[in-house]
Length: 330
Ligand SMILES: NC(=O)c1ccc[n+]([C@@H]2O[C@H](COP(=O)([O-])OP(=O)(O)OC[C@H]3O[C@@H](n4cnc5c(N)ncnc54)[C@H](OP(=O)(O)O)[C@@H]3O)[C@@H](O)[C@H]2O)c1
Image 1 (cartoon, protein in one colour):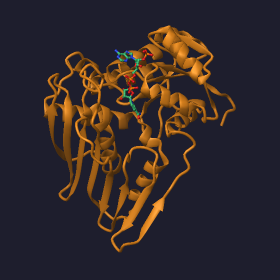
Image 2 (image 1 turned 90 degrees about the vertical axis):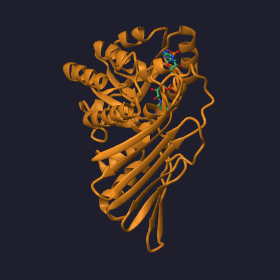
Image 3 (image 1 turned 135 degrees about the vertical axis):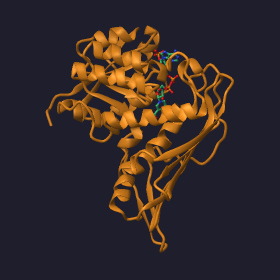
Image 4 (image 1 turned 90 degrees about the horizontal axis):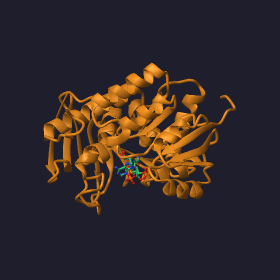
C-alpha cells in the first residue's frame, strides 16, 4: 500500500462526528486534518478536542481547502445530498453517513456525480465493516448453520428527544426506518439478498414519520426475516439467524462491535471474539482510506449497488407505510 497519509475533513460536529473523530486516531494511514461546522466557535471547540489543525465556520470553506483529500459527512439525513454534492464539486472523495440519501432519486444523483468526477464514494454503514458482522456473513456463507429459514432483528430504544430533533422532525427526514431500521434491513439483505415479497406496518407521528415500524421479508417459500425498529420502546437489540442445522446469535447492540455466538442444534457452541482498537468506526475509515490510496472508487464490502438496493427497499417500505418526506420525495 502506498505510504501517503490521507487527510480527512469532517463536516458537522454532532454525535456521530465525535465518534468518527475518536476512531480516526487509530487509523494508521489517515490524518484528521480539518473540521467544518455551521458555527466557527463550535468548529474550534471540536478541533481543540481532537487536535485538528484546521477549523472552518462553514462546510464550503472546508471543501475548498486544497489539502483535504476526503470528506466525512455527519449531518442529518436531509443534508447528505447537498453536502456530498458540495464536496464532489470541489473534487473531494466522500464517506457519507447512512442513509446515503433519503430516497433512490437522491442516491442516484450522488452516484452520477461521483462517476462524472471519478471520485471515491461510500456509505458509512459502519456495521458492514465490523469483524463480528464480517464473521457472521462468513459463517452463513460457509453453510455451517445450513439453509437459513428465519432471521429476526430488533433495533428499538425509547428516544428522549423532542419533535424538533432529527429523529422525529419530518423536515430532517425523521423516523426509524432510515435512522435505525436501516441496520435490520441491511442485515437481512446482506445475508439473504432482496426479498421476493414483504409486508410492513408503522405507527406514525403527528408529523408523518414512523415512530415504530415492523417489516417482514419473505424469501422463497420457506424463509422469513422479521424486523422491528422503534423510538418508543426499549427492547433487547438482538439479531438471530436460524438455519436448518443451528443458529447465530448477535447479542444486545448487535450492530455494534461485539461477539458472535454459533449455537448448533446438537447443543455445541462456539463464541467468536474480536479485538477492537477503538469504538468500531475505525473499520469504515480504514476501508475508505484503503480504497482511496489504491485508486478504488467504491468498496468491495458495500458497493454502490448495495447502497442502491438498500435505499430502494427503504423507499418501498416507506411507500407501504404511507411515509412521505415532503421536501424530498416529490
Ligand atoms: N453510523 C452510526 O452509528 C450513526 C449513529 C448516529 C447517527 N448516524 C447518522 O449520522 C447523521 C447525523 O446524526 P447525529 O446523531 O450525529 O446528529 P446530530 O447529533 O444532531 O448532529 C448533526 C450535526 O449536523 C450539523 N447540522 C447541519 N444542519 C443541521 C440541522 N439543520 N439540524 C441539526 N444539525 C445540523 C450540526 O453540526 P454543525 O453545527 O457543526 O454544523 C450537527 O451537530 C445521521 O444521518 C445519522 O443517520 C450514524
